[in-house]
Picture (cartoon, rainbow, N blue to C red):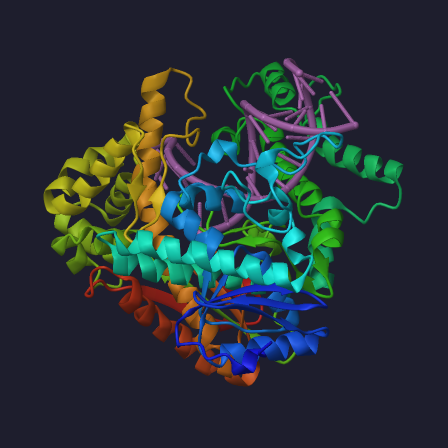
Length: 574
DNA sequence: ATCGTAGGCGCC
DNA sequence: AAAGGGCGCCTACGAT
């Protein structure tokens, strides 16, 4: 059997990979399938590096492989993540390997076999075939294989890698046949690498000053409870600060919105719901409002970002959570463990480690600039040349800047009321191409038709997404889908652009020792040795224009970023 | 007991 | 200023 070093792989050629820790690698190009025994992590790492030196495009089924590579400390810059590309091409989110295979083979996705659906005492049906081969007689993948049985032997791992290459080739063929083939292929590659970045983000974690975090938690939630009854006492104490404002004291469960509503009614305050923005309008009417709003903030930290959250997700000064490169709706990145919704008052706890600094950068006015890029509206593209796009639009429409901003955002979100809706006709007149594109997307959404982002992502609008909150029947559900589609076109394209930026920063930052530690929709945080911080900041800014060069359908749309070097996340501007 | 849904709210 | 799009995560609660 030849070793990996004997194989000649053309630059950019698909190279399937299936890692079996402690055993070796299954490998496959479109023309050959083989395996390499490697019992130690060092051997595994060396084997991958030797192959990567030939500059293949690595192919794998799903994020379990990048997770394994990152654990080994291997760095990859070209890959094709089959599951990620599937989501790009077909929409949807929680997709399984079995469904990806069935889709490619034109099999009914509803027939994809599930693990364990066969009773223990049942005889294997004819469809199951030989467990040693990955594909059953009926054409579907063996569920045992998709659930890990591919890793039983290196021979199987090699076959598994070969199947991944087969799927990747099929996906590329689908892309080649499209009118937007070049752009879509480019997105498939960038989104795949973004998935690898996700594995790195999950592994490295976000630096957290644990003492500072505990100080903030203590301020909001009190000391760390020692027993259950101690915890109850702290909770009761927190509740009491609100309840003492009642004219007729009685126990109220503040965590139950209905009880809060009737409590307020007894105090002479009638509200349809108890949301913060509505309660804020009642500030000054009754002291309990202020106390209740303050209670909510403290309760948020106590329940979601309290000691339990610390114990569960922060270890060795790093906050770690799961990352996904593309969510179910429009393709934004998602993260768990609170990484995407840390309250601002907790951001002082996100601190660079000794000898390191953060470079923080966020894209400025990214949604309207993306709208200009994807619509090709000449007048709107002209407006992106300015640092402050909204001011240019305001001057054009002859309205105040704030009004122009709300109108532009409203057009992208589907706002229908208020002053922003009033300005909409003017917006149509000045920027007809951009507005027509949004309206067209909204129409498609209403009719349950999918929309496609400029990078080629298919976004489904017909499923149960975006229909909550509408009680008055089908018409408003259709409007809700329209708003969703309208926004998804922009949000999805912005997400594609952001990911190109993120993976560029990841690569350009490597010689500087920089580590991407947070991706937040339009904001990047990188952790860098303090001596390299200035150079890294320059690089991050330059990478915006480079990302635009790779991603933007229009070469003359200007994108801007605010970049700063800081020690704590709370030192972000404003 | 376990699951799904709703109200609520954190962030973009 | 108005209350529109996305996500994750909390509690409460009704259905299974």
